[in-house]
Length: 68
Image (cartoon, rainbow, N blue to C red; front, side, top):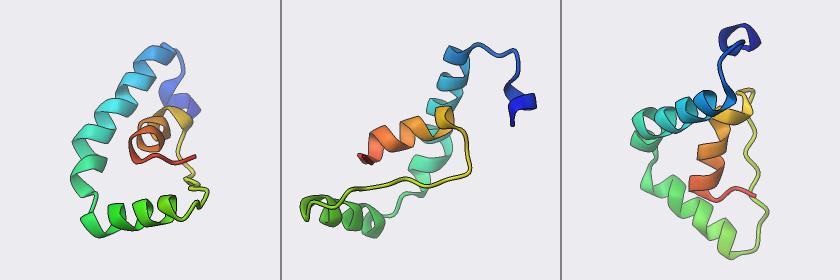
């Protein structure tokens, strides 16, 4: 992945993460999954996002879905 983003300004990589979230991730979020996240949040669970992806791609997902 480093070779793919090498030389690209960090701000542009962050923007690509936002675009990815809105164009791909948001369209695939199911209500039952969002409800389960909310249920765990209400129960005081610590929500952890685990992925092999890079932080700039995961940041919008973490923020929008409320992972800790």
